Length: 131
Image (cartoon, rainbow, N blue to C red; front, side):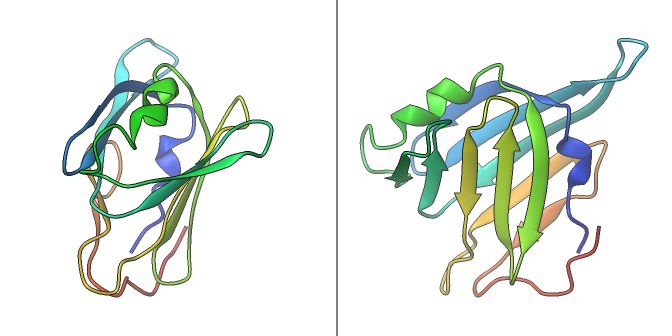
């Protein structure tokens, strides 16, 4: 699978949560046209680190637990990395970080849209990540 490095430079244009967390990214090219539009769907526990290093664990479907994700709105992705069997790390330009580890029993995260290759990390994760 390919690491979605194309997300670098894209902005968070929507956040939503219920039994899943959904984050929409939009990236524009130098000519102002949309070069990337994608949705990250997270279906498992995730963590978020603030610029000062404080870390919170967020659980989709657990009431207002994912509320800190609303602060991602309008932030710009600085870097995306996928390690191990599918641990997703998204770093933002202000120092905020998002991390999703593979779930042993369920799909943990997926990324769909255009401007990058779609990704689905199934139960137990995925191997063979390439940049």
